Every structure is written in structure tokens, then in C-alpha cells.
Amino acid sequence: MSRPYFVTTPIYYANAEPHIGHTYTTVVADTLVRWHRQRGDDAWSVSGTDEHGEKLVEAAAKAGQTPELFTERMSAAFQHVWAELGIAPSRFVRTTEPAHRRNVQAILQRVHAAGWIEAREYEGLYCVGCERFLTERDMENGLCRDHERAPELRRESNYFFLMSREFGWLRGEIESGRYEIRPERYRNEALAMLRDESGLGDLSISRPKSRLAWGIELPFDREHVCYVWFDALISYLTGAGFPDDPAFAQRWANAEHLIGKDILKPHAIFWPIMLKAMGMEPPRRLSVHGYWNVDDRKVSKSLGNMVSPLAMRERYGFETFRWFLLREMSYGLDSNFTEEALVERVNADLANNVGNLVSRTLNLVEKFCDGALPPLDASVARGLEEALVAAQDSIESAMAQLQPQQALAAIVVFASEVNRFLDATKPWKLAKLPSGLNEATKILGVAGRAVAALAELLAPFLPEASARIEAKLAAAPITRGEPLFPRVELRKE
Ligand SMILES: [Zn+2]
Image 1: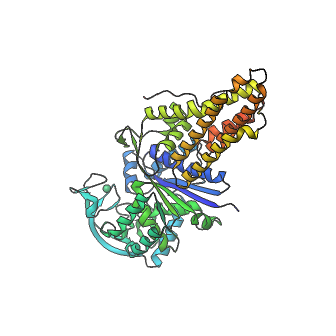
Image 2: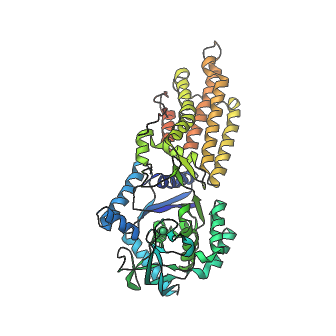
């Protein structure tokens, strides 16, 4: 039976178009899905847009639009970009869609009935950027640390989710690895949050409609809407088919969330306790990556350095950009993007190595074998078989640890080995010797199989290039044709 696998990207906040950070997480999720499907697993993926909250109402107002129209447009922009890039999540959730609203309200009702929610008068310093009341530690010099803006003094009646009663339980889940948070540094960070509870407390999960009308109504008090994080996290359940899809339970038991480190707290702390309150298990795993900086600066709207994936496709081709993202970032650590580094990297790895190997092999098969792949000679293949097994093993262990950059490095090593094999055996010289054609044919039979193996290794990472290599090998006759990865030049504007 095929094993189930379920992966999510964050439900992206729909207040700006997708940039390099969104693209990275989405590409990693797509790669994992393809990786699992290649192994015969039953993989399911969810992405979507988070369309509620005060910040969104602000962004819509700035754009001179209603929140309905603004979120419609932004969500369409996300869906359009992923479709253009050949990335198709199994389910794309909009948090404004009726199925999701029904789920949020049913869950709120259930959690409320089970005694997890309490009304309290609350006065405190509120940051619109964070969409919550701040604690002492969220502030520096009277400003919100994250947003560098002054919070407002607010007094309101709020509903609180009684999260703090389960901090001890959650610590146990994380320490035992039943809820796995990786890499290690983020597991430690989550445990540190739980050790020092002064930064946590219970979670305010309502906003009075008098202040914020845009949101999902609380089913037990129509004068309030649901806090945006409580609503957004539930989208993972909606995307997995909660509550009716027969595949839901299987998916949920194998859930992996991919997130950036800025949203560790809601995923590491709020979410597992919310699930416990619903009578459900935490996800299996939370995999946290670092930030992409661009030209050594933080990505921000005001700097205009957001890096549009469609612009990168236009300049360099999408799969070269995809290669760079996967190859450059060590999952968990921050990484830097420059177009100069992209050009250098893809020329070295793809144009000069992988692409060159494919071209020269196909060219020699066209020239000396009448365009037909010769049969495999096991005695000649031996050295390369070892190299292939070594590459497969490295990729397997890299993917188990979610280190795609190491998987790609192993593919590059394998392509180099095959290139060296051709350089050493020189079939183009042999073929011209009176009795050398037979030997040259054997060598090209092996090289052709190595190129086919390369296409298979590449499939989860560069699906389009992999399919093109397979098509070239399946053609009758085989010809060199167009280069797979033409050299790219810096086209920075
Ligand atoms: Zn803030």
C-alpha cells in the first residue's frame, strides 16, 4: 500500500504579491510532493491565502478597495503565479471561502463548549502590525520590536483561548519528538518560549466587530470576529479535507508544515494546543527555514527588492531560478540572493556540467550510433553504477533531513563523474580507430543510461528539464537538438 504524505506551505498573507520567500517555501513543498510521488507515496499538498485581519483591511484601504475585492485580486495573483510556474497544490485554500468559514465556526463552537474559551475584560498595548496585544518583551523603547511602531492603549472585552493550561503537555510533545520541530535550533527556540511563559499566556482570539468587521464571526457571540491566526491555522485542516473527506485522518497523521522562522510561535505553540482542544493530535512535523536576504538586505516592500518569480522566469528561465533557490539555501539558515550569484551558479552547475553532459552524450549517440541508444554493457558500466548508487544514497539521506541543497550537490557530483568517464574513455576518438567503434558503442550505451538516470534524479527538483531529457532519449532517432540549459547572462535591470 502506498504511504500517505501531507505537506503544507503557510497560508500566505494576501497583502502583497508573491516574492522570493513565498516562492522558496512553495518550491520546497512542490519538490517534496514530487519526491514522495516518485517513491509511490500518496502525497497531498496545501497552499492558500490568508485573507482576514486588520492588516489586510489597512492594505485594502490603501489600495482604495473593499477587503472583498482586494483579497479576491491578491488571491488570484498567488494562484496565477503558481500556475504559471507549473506548481499545482492539491488544494488551494482561501480563508474567506465558505467551506473554511464553516470549519472555523464548528471548531470554535466545539472548543467553546468544551470550556477552553473565556470572556475577559482586557486593557493593554495593542500593535496593529502584530494584530494583538503586546507584552513587555515584545517592546523596545515603547515601540513594537517587530514593527517599530508605537502600540495603542486599548480596552476591550475579549475571548481568550485558555492555552496556558497546556504548556507543560506541549513541552512533553516537543521534547519527546511526538511533535517534531526541525532543525534543532527552532525546537530549542520553541522550548525556550515555553520555559519562559511570561511572553505567552492565554491567547486573545476575538476582535469586537465595532473595531474590525472583516473576519469570521464567533458562533457564540455575533458581536465579535475571530482572531486571524486562529482562523488561518485551521486552513490546514480545511485543506486536508476536514471534516468529511475519507482521506482526512490519514493525511493528518502524516502532516508536515513548512514555514519561515517569523511564524514559529503560532505554529510551535498556538497550533498544537488548538488541536488538543479539538481532541486532535499535533501535526507530525514542523520544518522551519530562514530568511532570504536580497543583495545582503532584508526583503521589504519599501526597498523594492521583493524578487518576483515571474520576472526571474522572464530573465533566466524558471527552472534555473528554482535550482538556485534549492541549491543555495541551507534549510533552516538565512541565505542571500543576488542575480550575479544565480548566473554564476547555474552556469557552473547546469550549463557547463549537467547540460553539457546531456548534449555531448546525445551528440555522440547521434553521430556514431545512428541515433539509437546502444545496449548496456555491464562490464563497462561498473564504475558509473557505483557513482549512481552513491548519488542515490546521498540524495535519500539529504531529503530525509530536508536538506535539498545537499541533494542537488550530489546530482552535480554524479554528472561530473559521468563527464569524467567520457573525458577518460574518449569515445569520439575510439570510434575513428579501425577497430574502436565497438568499444565506443559500449561506452555510449553506458553514458546514455547514465543520462537517463540523471533525468530520474532531477525529476523532483527540475521536473521540466527532467521531462525534456527523457523525451530526447525516447526520440527516434536521438539527436543533440537544442541545449538543455543555455548559458545565462546577467540581465539585471
Ligand atoms: Zn507589531
